[in-house]
Image 1: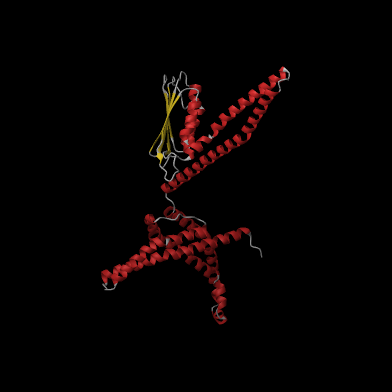
Image 2: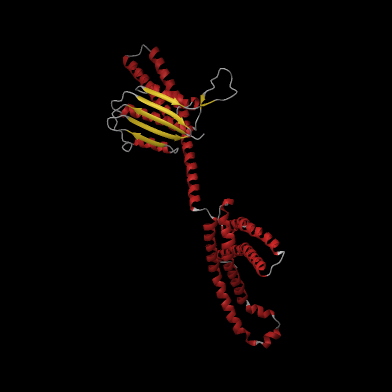
Length: 420
């Protein structure tokens, strides 16, 4: 005989709900019995003093405390194993919530659980009353021939009660899950704090992954396309120097190709440095910014003030005042802020004759200030370059500020967190 899928699912769900309620009744009944025991002991000390009562009471109160705290883990197992509801592991400082559920709410829920299980047992017994009758001796059935009509009524009532058990059990299970999540679950503030922590970790991972991808692209361009272009430029230069007997038109073509190859190498070098300069990884932020200042099209005054490490055990002759290295993501953001700012000054800062870059570390904050003496008027909300720069600063929880009044000067200030 094949059971219909819908009926099979209903039976499985009912079996799960009854098992959940039965396990909960066991866990909720223990604190209720302890409550009754403690109340009886207290009443005994008032109305019927006994010298042994204070000793027993001193033993029962710790049991009540252990029940209020120690039953949380079995409750978590019950929710997880029988209903698939994951409750967090509460810390000891959240013992008030555990006491509230195990010692106050549990004794109230056990009343509903006992009523439901009693209804289930009574419904099963009533629906099988005619079967119970056939188990008694036949002489009793012969002497009490009118048992059929009351037995039929009891059977119908038992079947109706049995049909009401699944929805009642499902409703009680949903009520317990709602109460369990509200009392033993994560509070709204803790959930928001954990969400912020998860988002911070995922954002840091995304930033690190993007930085690693830029490093990979820089290596591929440097070791692949750049080397091929250098080889091409060398071959064209060799052909230009050795093939002197070619017609003037061919000489012009080789000369133009050689010039284009050198321009392509220069553009690729700038692109590679813009992706992720190797000097930033090898020598640090100070050296990378010095290279930027040297290549800038206008005079740049650079001042880098970073604390130094004093490593021990270095060989003689090596410097012992090396600048402290920060997180690679923070160094990369600081480098690209300065790079983009100097590029914007060269392209858009009218009447600018010089720029000043100051990088200082104050505790756990790296402050980068870029200023120029141009005519000002830069609007951070007007162009995608400054917006992208602000977004990149915020990707590492930094702050971006810009002051550019009409007539100048323009100053960009960036603060990046760099924990010790």
